[in-house]
Length: 198
Picture (cartoon, helix red, strand yellow):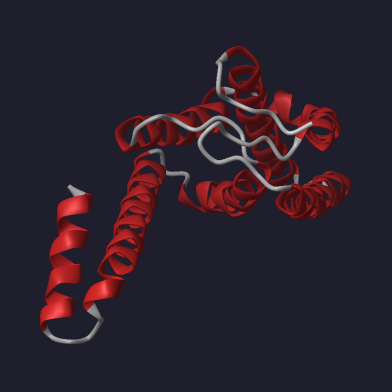
């Protein structure tokens, strides 16, 4: 779907001499990526609105997405699987907020600390089809480490000022990334051709 739309848009840009013909594939890929990400975000917002938890979801996404992009982890094999799993992640997060008793928020600091420590040990986790060079590993490990420290610090601050829900949301973002990183770590160890960052 997005491939056809992006190809059509790129063709129109070439015909109007807005982009050069030799740059077609670069622009087509960029537009396809943009359309996919926009569709994902719109779907998340709709789900958040259905649960009446849109502000909470925005906080989660603001914490989770940068951490996910820097830390790596499991990646679905197809765009459809990626979309389904991403929406399932959002739904499960919102279910935690809606159905878990408020008393569980008391453990946000414990969750954040455990997730942060394990993430420090294993990130970045690369995929078999996107191995990282040594310089890239160093860069992503530093970037992910910085984000982890910031988010853990915010969890601690919010917990101290009794903003329990905000603290819990950020702790969940760390927890979700840990699950994804561990899944990627496991896949890299068990499937031939996949590599794990040592």
